[in-house]
Image (cartoon, rainbow, N blue to C red; front, side, top):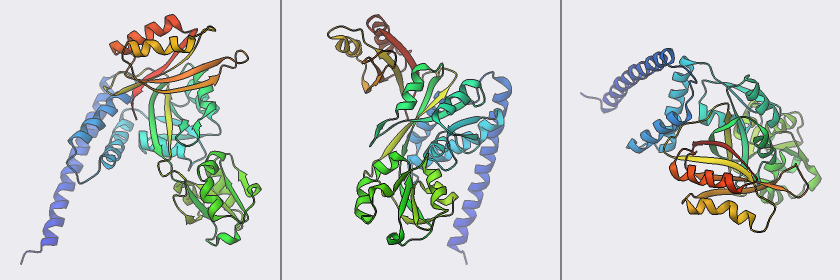
Length: 355
């Protein structure tokens, strides 16, 4: 008598064997490509095109997000056969920055934890890391000023972006919230969970919220104190062996942080790109309008405008701008040419695939 369950499992075994053979074949081709070509093993535009094509072909039932995650890991493993890759990030291990590295590059890379955003830039500039991942803005708390300041002066290029949903959790050594006397976290995480903390830990004074260098550091501190808790991501709490007291405590369920990938080379067009630049206006009436006019004239959409003190002179500002398209696209190239004539200064940070 036929067993339907056994038949299905036998079919799965057959498919697994076929998948293994195909993945092994893909890995062999990747290794051969590594022998033939010169240059970087990581090609952001190529990998973006691969993932976009596969998501378009995806028949389900897996969601596009899961398909992208699966093939990112396959590409990561195949890429490692071509050339070992080191990626610097804001550490220690367990931070959202490390999660962003894994989302973009997969696990087959050496993830190099750094003590500061400055160190991430230094590691890449010195060649100790091929790429770096730095936070640039959060949907709730806005821009990360230090990243913007360093982008203004670095010779590095923006090679990609990663949009990471941020889910904050409350961890402690025990689950009785009435025993909590202090909470550790990064200042931005406190801000992202402000209302939840006020509603659920009302017995604590505001001074009980103690700033930590990172959420991973916050969990380390909480692990040493039975009366302390930490607001952090899932991985940070797991690393320190803490108990999950409450999950998804961020006030905005759509809370997202955007990270930039920085590297030493420019990226070719992928077909769905963004260009980041920073510019300053001449000191005269209507100067800001003059800067934005070329974008409208050439039909280029602006997706972000952020002002920062220039640090060169009192009350002078620079403007960080994201526009749709690659710098080599005719419309974008025309707009950039016009901007160079009107701006007091203009630096193209990079063109890269949209996240």
